[in-house]
Image 1 (cartoon, rainbow, N blue to C red):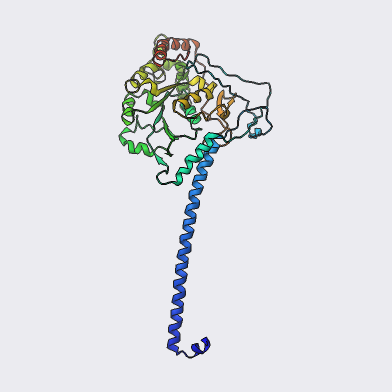
Image 2: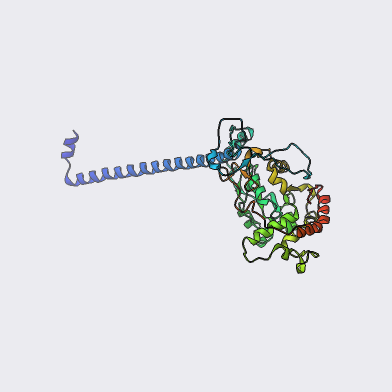
Length: 401
């Protein structure tokens, strides 16, 4: 029947019929192609969103489920072959709640040349809580955003500020700017919008943190921070000012081969009688002078003072205090650290950026040059009254020589 109808068409009708059929086929193809493309885009968008959530979630798990140090378990978590040549001893922890830093000690063991690190990986309650937080990303209004910092590590230079930052960043509820922004001392004229742009993305319940050690000693910074947020929590890492000055000098000398000797710079006219208080490394160590300016704008309750010495010998203790101060659960514990006896510095089993054991860098634990004992004793004599004043202001005896 169709063939008979087709044969009965004139040439003109045949051409018109063919054109109509081709048009219908084209329209049908175009519609189906657009529909398939839309479905594919929607699928990719949802897949990317799920991948983002999963990636962030895995980061949280990686930051939290750190292997504990143990010698009595056969379930190896870390391949100890990667640690050959590094003498590792466990870091001791303490249950003391005394704020005094008068007793600072470390325990080490050298009975074996090879140390095995065994672990039992667990997912605890805080990880499940982190799961819940990252699920909020799926809900409208809960996407990550940048915020001005509510916590600042304001100093002191060469006292352990970088170590403190890296250690506290292990906590899934802490997000920090990776570099020193220097907003309040160098870039204040750029405005808070510029500052916020340099902060990491956070979700509800996370703390935004930034570290710039020069804030502590810069005159206008306390007022500027207070103007931004009067409730800002401030972390101050302090260290024996004599050792701090030598460390400061050592860092500068490593960048300048023709630098004068420490003794020539620390004293006037080459005599140990007069200390050169205008030289930066010496001047910074007068902590009480700078603290007075901060206390004009912030109550002592908003400042936490961390012992740089104890941060090295017992990082879990000091980080525990920091977590309490910030209102965080104690997620970062002794299980996150191992002690590198070669560097004389605590290192990490895991960090926010790396899942393998590593130390903070070549500049941490750098050997100090030999300094004349008489020069050291003279500097200690110089700092002693300032240290006593600092102890009174903070209510903490750091027991510096």
